[in-house]
Length: 411
Image (cartoon, rainbow, N blue to C red; front, side, top):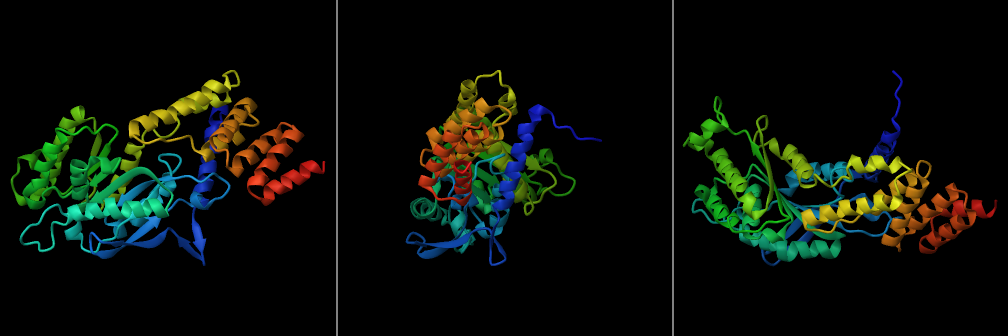
């Protein structure tokens, strides 16, 4: 069968290829090794120890053709266990499902101490969760902000006891993060005291613009479902009963506290296998409105629609995301650039409008002038193309641009 690409699908197809190419090129290879990130460290006065951190930064941060930008940050508990999967997932989904993000993974030194909210007698080192969150807030976050291109949007992800810390942080310091991901949280800890704390806190908090996604694993005994588990009183169902009770609290209070909450019961996943699929679904839920809708992009090829209203709708899309998520998301330079360049033949007026938007929004970027030079070159306006290429080269010397400029001058 011959494959025929519908004209309205052409942009989606081109854009998908562009993004796929970016994903491939985002792999960093050094000395024949694929490098995902760096190991850094923070000297903590609060914890009285030096803490290692594993940090993934999007490859675009090292690209000099675009204007410098800042990235939302994921803080990942049990970082040594989940760094590779979360960093790889973020890299793959960036630009289509979610924005590019930095991942800061925090490996454990004393997991029981750091992730539990209070001390239990038999568990000698338990109860250091408050200090650990203080370390993240007062030492780790400032360090990341100073040394990495970090934006103010922050997400906290935790599994098991890490999930317990996520819930306690949302209950006690909801403003510390914008979004939260709790993976099969250990709400049973200390006879469910955190559950009572959550019930009181979420009844009075205003969580507008905050998001929580929770994954629930199948930890049920054989021949038992969640309905029967709720009625059970044995220790075998204590873990999942506590999580189901927490889910009920969120569903009840979300109407009043405005929390954007979703959960899923993963019947085919155990406590150990649930993190990956929960993290994936969490990103899709939290950033569910991030992608520009096809109802808008399909208008890009319609030359009868004025360019101004289309750009206004693109801006309105990002403004709506910003309003819902409590953080300013602007149309990314690379996205607007790709739209502009790919539309030069199909819809030149709209292509120009996308590229001019970038010049206005990112006036110090070499790329915006180089791309506008490509536009004028394509529409055979030699003098304007030369002017734009020269402007680009005044900001950054780049061999491809120099070659294009010399070719035009020597015509």
